[in-house]
Amino acid sequence: MIPVAGQTDRSLFSVHGRIALVTGASSGLGRAAASILAGAGARVVGLARRESALSDWQRSCGGDTATVVADLTDRAGLAKTVERATRRFGSPEILINTAGINTREAADDVTEAGWDQTIEINLSAPFFLAKALVPAMRASGWGRIVNFASLQSRRAFPGGIAYGASKGGIEQLTRAMAEAWSDSGIMVNALAPGFFPTELTAPVFADRGLAKHHAGQTCIGRNGEPGDLAGPFLFFCSDATRYVSGQVLFVDGGYTAK
Image (cartoon, rainbow, N blue to C red; front, side, top):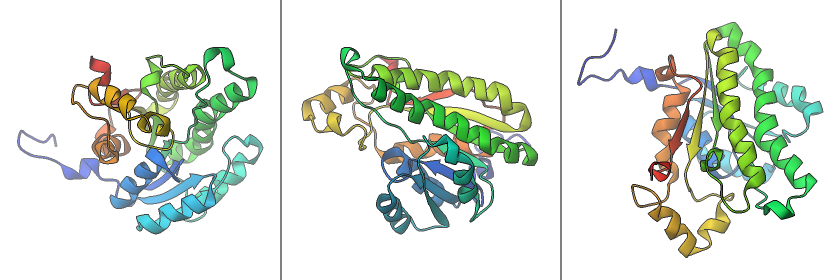
């Protein structure tokens, strides 16, 4: 039944009881995403490299949660990581690829190690982790994959050549994943946040003038806050996206509109 004007089918946006795996859950937007899902009743597995920060997230979050300490750049250990991630609740139905790195190297100073690490964490890991989880999603006929793109998916910023390349790749990877898997009920989309205060953007927010400049570049007039992601995020994780796939939603206060 299609809701009429003035009515809302709240179940469309529910993730209650769903199993979610969130990478980068120990800090920043990954931690926010994991907390949003847990608060909405999902069973959440937080994955990150830093055990103490991950444990701190779990203590502060509450809800039905589990943690996995792993390095997603270790492809040889990916099967073991997936097995550990499914141990508590079963195979994830929702995958959130939030883990990322920004080396902030100027183009002339980019090192091979910095380039390779950025591409591996930001672009390769989301694909290979998704590829490992897709068979179970396909078998159930339902899955949601949410990648994290960036303003730098489409815009260039100083010191961001490797990061921008990886996030431009995420935008196309999202479309390619959707083409490959959506006919099995697996919807793949991406959020592209504007400037939010996280560990990754700490150099921006440490400079009050620069933070103010970026706030002024938005239509709204301020930088992002973690709660600003909740609505768009739950939309992408729920049945509300049953006919939405391969899309990138910029949650940037209108930054890219100006």
